[in-house]
Image (cartoon, rainbow, N blue to C red; front, top):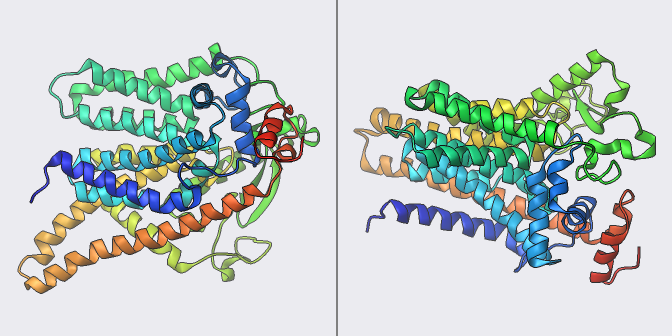
Length: 469
């Protein structure tokens, strides 16, 4: 029995959902839940319980992510202090990222198998770890889902003879929501503009206007409508951007742990000269670009990770821990397929490269692997597109005329390799999630929120029978 188009799509989504359940549900249980005792989760609940939604849109500090905060507030209004509802949405957004990666490949290739393989590799990428265990980090997956949907719409528009206003309006709304979820969503607006420039001229003017309007809307809301630090300097939703609220960092600007070469330092930008700042910016952009493509080579803070014998070359203060040559296999295959996509059809894949570059440029302040997901989605989508061209070339130039047993053997290698990669990566991802669950459960929420008032931590303590704050 042959599956029609919708049945194939449903099958792919069902497989992705099953793999997601296999990775996450043994850790989160049903309904999904882990103890929210770390700083960032208490922070998210503080936003959900303590402020009115207009505050998120009319106040901004060094970060402006009002739609994410609004989603937290809305969930609390609907379900109250039901943590499983918050975690369920985070898990759903993770799955949705894999689905939009599938759509990005399918809309450009009509190959549901290549699209499904790209989505499966994305789903098992452990760089989504933070977006699952931190309630606040839905900001990145929300930006990716909305931004990728806007890009899918732009690709789809290229195939229409006349503009469809509802589609164009949908692209604009998706791009604005992506940017208002997290600033990395702006990379998708740049990609839509690239689709307009390199694609069919029929929609060029409309898509360029939409991309520009989305960026201007975000900037206008952030710099004109919003004013002042979000909720005061002492209660931010991203502590890394507000370290000045801690006495020892007051007046020193953004302070974070940052890598440079093979070393890691605590850096406050207010202490640096102009040249030093620009050097840090350049390193963080380069580290993010490399980290998107070859995650094993970049550490948690943007430092180089390499074999021990290269440690002295990069100025590492200690031996590199955790480097593995085998960890480079999947990234190398993905990059090779992406290169095929960029070479064979730059019109389709150049916008995805713009997402990767845009993601890197927007990470100039510091590197964190939770901030690279937009570029990661674009990379896997490009690899999926490249896979279709490589498969067509192999069929025409290498498999034709070969004995049947050889064709069957070669064709079987691909799904077997994909299944093995899915199993090993998914198992490692699940173990990482389980480690976070155990770590968070041992913390006291009252100790995690020195800059907050005690209302929300006290409520958490009461709910879980912890000592009073």
